[in-house]
Amino acid sequence: MGIFDAMKDKLGDVDPNQLKEGVEKAGDFIDEKTGGKFAEQVDKGQELANDQIDRLAGGDQA
Image (tube, rainbow, N blue to C red; front, top):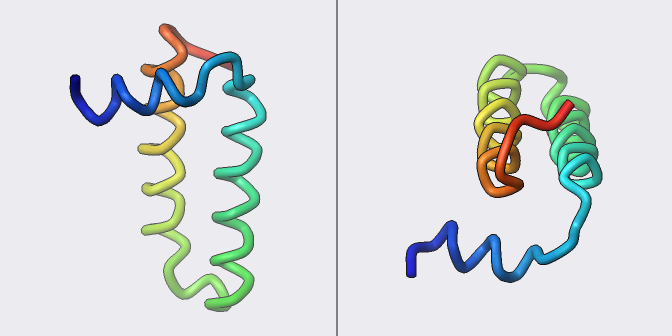
């Protein structure tokens, strides 16, 4: 069992949109604390995290 399979099992019935909200809030927090210095990197990380959430959820989520 891979790491993503284990994550999917642990997530169970969690709403992917709630996870994406958390990713967005975390990115906003980082941008706030760093004065936006790493905004591009944070945005890329958010995009990758949201892609994985979609993958684990079994499809694209809005």
